[in-house]
Length: 181
Image (cartoon, rainbow, N blue to C red; front, top):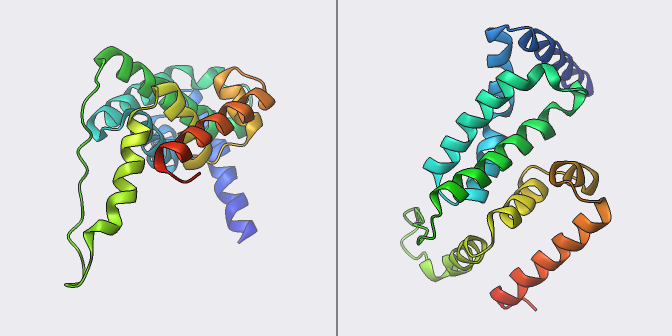
């Protein structure tokens, strides 16, 4: 398993070098490897799939132009996800949207299914929607993309301890809003 992961990382490292030199096929390899992570983070920041797609498209354009400036090629994923989160924040700011978030609720699988069990999910989505885009981005980078405090600090321009403190305050706020004191 470790050998397969190592080979995948080697392929991506080679793809970064080729893509930075203008190889579109190599760039497509990078897109395939990271597009879903970028979309998940952008969606959490925007709260809207169309806006998230718009943000990720813009992020890929930026990545194509700036890939050659990436100093540490092993940091490709955190860099790409950070670009997507930043673009998602920009999209939200440009749109200045404060709207109700429509949730696509799946049809219950079993006839005896109680839809009231989904109330917690809806409450969480609504609580996240009330946060500022920067706060949603921080939560997305931590809990969706899996960034540690050092990676978060690089992505947000804060210190690791300041980032941990901000996360703790955000989680505290969400717990209080959701009644999980």
